[in-house]
Length: 224
Image (cartoon, rainbow, N blue to C red; front, side, top):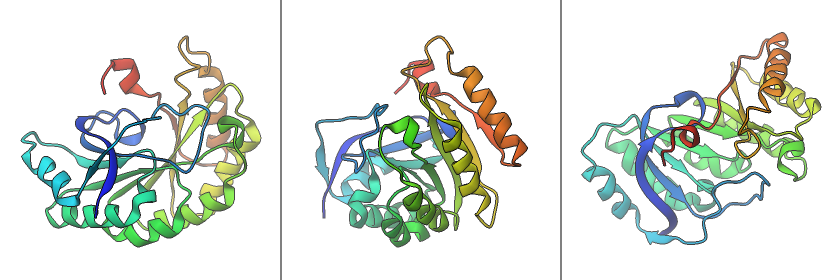
């Protein structure tokens, strides 16, 4: 069994609630979506078997918080991911999945081996794509079995109605889910999105949804 992997490396987490934590990253090649703000459009990959990646993880001598399985979209290579998660989980590692939150059936098959799910919610007015609410709802119901938080990209084009729909999605869940508003780094060089994010955060606060604004800090710090 082999998977298409874009890169394997160690760095600090640059997004979301685990900002600043050192992680070991396994970046899967390929995605089922085409968001207009995507910053990980890799064109090359190498093929690995699970034990080859695990060998690289085991050889890394520094301590790290967790292993981030990211992409692209890792769940597109679900069978490989499941075997990889078994290996890392059985050897005492914490598994962290970064995902676009659309493949609920695939998530169901690996959820038992995950510790943390960093789920993107793709707002139609941000991505330039269609409505993914049904897929996101199904996905979050599965993801909420484990520790889960939501990230959503805020662009100049983002509409309030989409943010309200994220709020509705979160309020349907049986336990609280934290929402991270992430300014689109391609549009936010001079902080133009600050006011928009602040307004959306206040909207969420009034709906009793815990929300924070966290930029892509690895771009600010100039790290991988």
